[in-house]
Length: 535
Image (cartoon, rainbow, N blue to C red; front, side):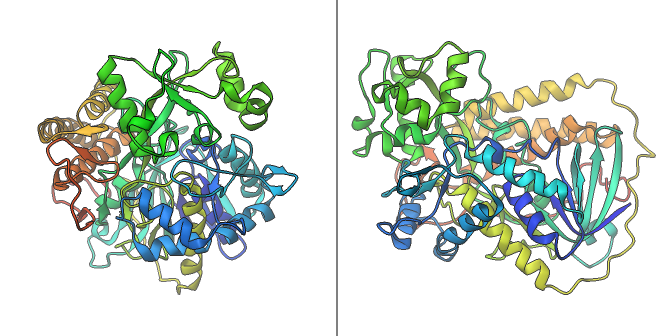
């Protein structure tokens, strides 16, 4: 058994920022499904939104966030994040993040939905630069124990121990190298596992984005909210050899134009803001044009800005496209929408506290209220930083509670899987019908079909999980199917179209904005509930 003062599940920006802030004060365990560097944060291209220019204002950033979020945003959470934006950026600068500068100072770009230039960035690879800066510091910190190639299976709560204390006491995790389940005890646990983009067939997310934290928190009794709001990034590179390669929002922010194969623009017909409209509008417009004209993709053209400008502002996108035979300085980029960001998640307060004592959340796995019905571009990394700090402050201010003795994982009544092909088949079926039935445009009939499929898959996965030893793929599939169910259930409950949720059956937007909240519980028939103590 391992024991820490704080266990952090997830190694993206929220997880690493929290670990670095905690390390001077307590013993930290940091779980990463693969390497520390393998997170969605490292894939972020555009930058981090914050009010850094004297011509900008807190109120304008708040308003832009609310407009993009279709006024579903929590006002207190939005103000909290925006007001703490400058300090979050200053902390990153102190860590050594090499933000792009020009003659006037730090270069600020503008992205869709923003009324001002407020996105600080490192060329077109901000997430990678931030990760490259923080990861060596995390590795060097003596008080941080890094558990790479570990995937959390479930949180350990009083319910699992058979007592009335509803606290979280740590987690069980699979060491995927040794094939052994590790029991991890912790006074506080922070979920920083990211989103659930891999629930869809096409996504800009890495393979690690499988909704693990959301699913675990739900099974532990936490509420989740607004899961129907899945942001589809309008411009993912469409190429048979490219896997999930994102064409940054900043390309449109710097003058890129969306065009049909004949070279004509179409965005002005959908929104007066054209290519700078919020992501939900642009993604829906592209989806409409592709279906209307029977297209496999549309095109994003920034060639008119010239080679020098493009190489300076988008060196990584230019280089990657060139590898695939596309010179974006001379020709347009083929693009399609793809699942990009989970705007809903685990309900928490301004300190990152969830419904379960001792359990916190930060980053994409959370539902803080900041994003509302649609995340404003480049607000995500900012949220990671602000809520990681908030959670750390609350953890350090909380008096430690004595921990019970945790039982080890029981595998005495399971065997090795005999047909692991079932996992891959279920995985592909799930992602395909989620794309077809729960995508950019939804209907009641499609949602009900998807939910019926989910119930069938859950039974199969239940049997598999109950009778065979856990594996990395099985854990992810179990979490994905539950997360998919939460998305569908939330979508069915929303009888309107708002932000990222567009329903043909309910095309109008309700006058009053309401959250879709599902109450988490530990069901008696939870997968493996007959086993003790964790399964």
